[in-house]
Image (cartoon, rainbow, N blue to C red; front, side):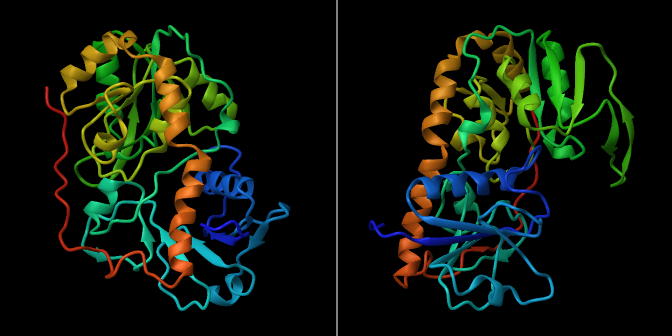
Amino acid sequence: MNESTVKILHVLPTRMPIPPPKYGGTERVLWALYQGQKQLGHEVKFMTKHPSRHPDAMLFDDSKPLESQVQGWADIVHFHFLYRGQMDTPFVCTTHNQQITPASFPKNTIFLGKLHAERSGGEAYVYNGLYWEDYGKPNLTATSDYAHFLANAKYKDKNLKDSIDIARQAKTKLQVIGSRRYCLKWRKDGKYHPYFYWGNDLTFHGMMGGESKNHIIRNSSALIFPVLNYEAFGLAMIESLYLGCPVIGSHCGSLPELIIPEVGVSTQSKSVMIDVLKNIGQFSRKRCHEYAKETFNHLAMSKNYLKYYEKVMNGQPLHQHEPRLDITLPYEFALTK
């Protein structure tokens, strides 16, 4: 990317504020991109459906065609969803989810990791980064008696059930962020039913964000993350790593790519997870923090996106043909003993 200033417009049809005061995944990534690209000297605005007094916020109008709202100011438009409309302004799309059924993607689609791209028939990818200024300082000397779970637990594939079992067999308390003790649990009939989690060793916080969430994480011994899905990235992992927590996770989705041996374990074996949690002191909290800070920060993400912007602005597609997923991905993840 040359030294000239680029005018960048990010478009995300969310009704949540930017930055999100509490929970917000893609919203938090957009905020980090905004901060990073501004810091690199570019002009940046973002368009959402949330009314905002932020000087660089634009309000999406449902009554008008999207292309008429985003053209005219920007040199490049960055959609945070798959956009297939007509545009005179060059644009890219980031897909923040893993498609698991047959689909095609626009030529200028950017994925969140190498595995995410390969599973989708593409090549272009940029790791998510976060604006670490919002997370405060890590606790690199914590010797906590609890681990934490961080996900929307109403979804079966987030696997709260095994997370609780792993913590209990390791004789470790569990702080659950993303569920309440009394919640709706998925059953085999395809419906959600009331469920109550028992035990004084479990603390439930529901959906939360900000410093309340960060305080729990930075004083935790580890993130238990045995997800059973094709998660495209997993912000919970890098948030936990930045605040000093190693990750004990499954071997699916993005985990085999993101969790290197120095900062955690990626395995399908529940017994291995239990053993690692019992011996969590083998990991350096400082190394976990440094890995997240260096690899998944807002400036690294911003610079990598700018390389793709340059290519598109020069009239080159990011993929010669539309990336395609031609099969239904096998959905057979499960933990072994």
